[in-house]
Structures are given as structure tokens and as C-alpha cells.
Image (cartoon, rainbow, N blue to C red; front, side, top):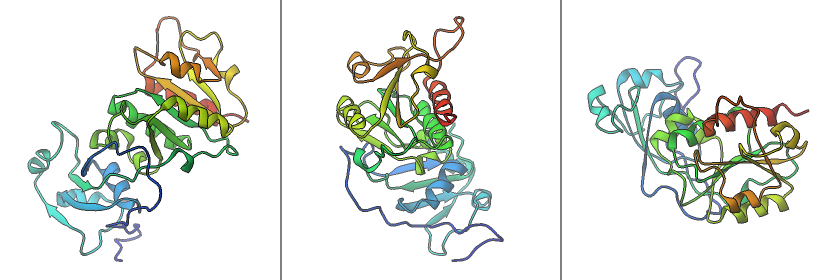
Length: 263
């Protein structure tokens, strides 16, 4: 495969990963991704099946690698690309149409022997927040994120752009019943901490030395009562009384950092 300088070769059309499926797709049909980081990460991902790339020549040149000779590329003007994506989306001269990633089972990611955390999102529906949480999960080496299939955004260009490539590297498990999934995590050896502003315990005191599942609820509503009951502890982040709460993606980043800094 040809290379440009010392850049890595992009994988082009990758075979789909074989194996078990989860509770159902979060996305039906194809997915359009845009922006250099999101598109480049998808092109490098062997679990992706790519359909077509629309790009400006500058966009192609910005990629850290070279496409195979037979890769389906259609060169287009910036204004033409803008019609393929959400309004005012920063496509950076690259729009990739591909198949959604295969679903995963929770059993595929549970590893009670690892100190790496799992992030559990209880009805966090904003795709920008989910994308930002994926990015933090990748930065702090989380095992996976887990969401309910009906109350989470689908795989999309907005999620991928906000994740800045992390959508391709952090496993995203969708489950039918989040409470049951938390029970399975406990059986696998994870200590489940729900982040709640009204909790009496501080997060540092509640954080164990071993495997941990960090459970975060939607902004405003917070954790649902049933999900809080399936946590081993509820804890709050030490923020100033001048602020009622943090954005859920910021809270996730702080919790992941604290988990990563354990000795």
C-alpha cells in the first residue's frame, strides 16, 4: 500500500468485526462522519466498513496517511460538502459515509481484574456530551461506556466530531436494561459509584482501589432513583457552592481523572 512520506497507510475498506451483537443498533442505515479527526480515525479503524469519501483536495492532503488506489473518493467544493452534513458543521473538507460499528455485548468488555473504569450514562441524550465523554474515556483509558439503547443518541457525525476520534477506540455498549447491566458489573467485581450532587460522601472517599463503574445521570434530572439504588455508593464532586452542578461531560472527565490517579 502506498505511503506519503513517513505517514501511516490508511486501512481503506475494513472488514466488519465478527462476533456477538448487543441489544440492537443505535443507528439504522449508514453514518456520515465529518472533520479530520473523526474521519481519519474511522479510516484507520479495522472494524469500520467504508462506503464513500467526499473531500476537497486540501482535506485529503490533511490526512495522516494515504488512501488505497481503489478507495471511493469524490472530490467536491467546500460548499458542496456543507450540503452533506448538519448545518454549519465544521467538516474541514472531509465527509465519510460508512456503516455503523457492530454492537457489543456487555460481557465483551467486563474485566473485573482491571483497575480501568467503566463509564455508565443514565439517559444522557445530548450527542455533544456523549462525544465529549467518549473523548475523556479514551484519554483516561476507560474500558468502555455503557448506555441504555432507547435513551442515548445514535452513532452520528455530531457524536464523532465531539469525540475527536474516540468513537473508534472506546467500546460503546448499548443495553436494554441499565439496572440489570449494573448488577452484571457488580458480579464481575466492579464497585458502582453514582455521581450525585446531593450525596453526603465525597468522591475521593468513595473511590475504591479496584475496578470501578462511574455512573452519571442526565443534566437536570440526575440519576434516576432505580439506577441510584443499583449503585454501591453515591458521591459528589467537591465543587464550590456558587455552582449547583457541572456539565455531565465535565463531571465525567474529573471522575475519570481521579480514577486514573489512584495508586
